[in-house]
Length: 360
Image (cartoon, rainbow, N blue to C red; front, side, top):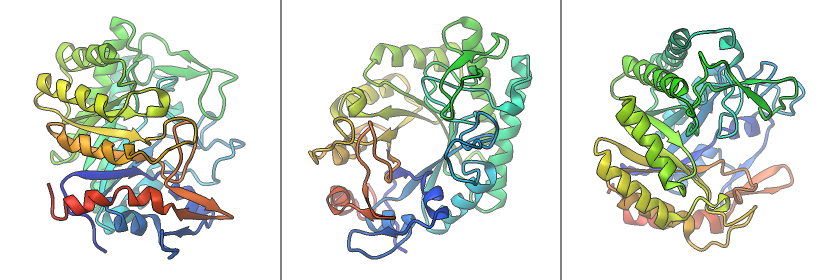
């Protein structure tokens, strides 16, 4: 199967497609031909996938906890992630592995310490756990012949990671939490929490590099329209706390008032002038202007075009091409029990293949 050989990453986070496959959902390309997600993405120039991983998704407050309406299998755990990345690699895709360091979604509203680490009472032991867990997953992938190309240490961590603990009314999505004890919480609103966050990031990065120095390490934050917050975070982590990484990613959703491709280009270009050793990418985007609405105004293509113009720009990842919501519409349409690639949506990416048939 042909994979776009450009060094520029045209990516998609396809974590949800594991569940679709398990339920027997059939996928169809724009011409109506039944294919799997890897074949469809490759046919339209995509050459990279992003996959999230949780520590214990079947635990009480996990993503796949009983009664939460998720699939019966614990997608997002190590075993499923290893199997899926092996498949992606077999098709020739580059892989970004996204560690949430939680049993549930880690995002700006919650960063819940996973159940297996919740009894830890000092940050050194927590950092050791981050290291051991990260090393185990990445090394297992290496031994399986499926080494990821890049590892994301944390997900949307502007206000820290390993920050919260669940309450009795914490729901299936991890909402409603308390801040963890200050001795371990990686909350960025106080000096102890900043030091803890840095310690955990360093542990994750070291684990990845101890498996293979060729794997890129990256961090991921959100709200790129808040440039002063982005500047504060970058200065705190990279300059004050002396954490190192190879790349920096942002979430970039127009529907969430995150700005637009032009503002993202300006932000990342300016950051690149200060952080000359970093590469940059958009970890999540959709292009939708509002809830489940996209006017096909070229924004999705423009997101990639501006990233090609950003100095040391790596690429961008469409978030969950089978899912529509407040972030915008999917790249696929449901017809009965099948998912059909939307021709108008996928055709928008055609210039990326035409302009870069053999690389940048």
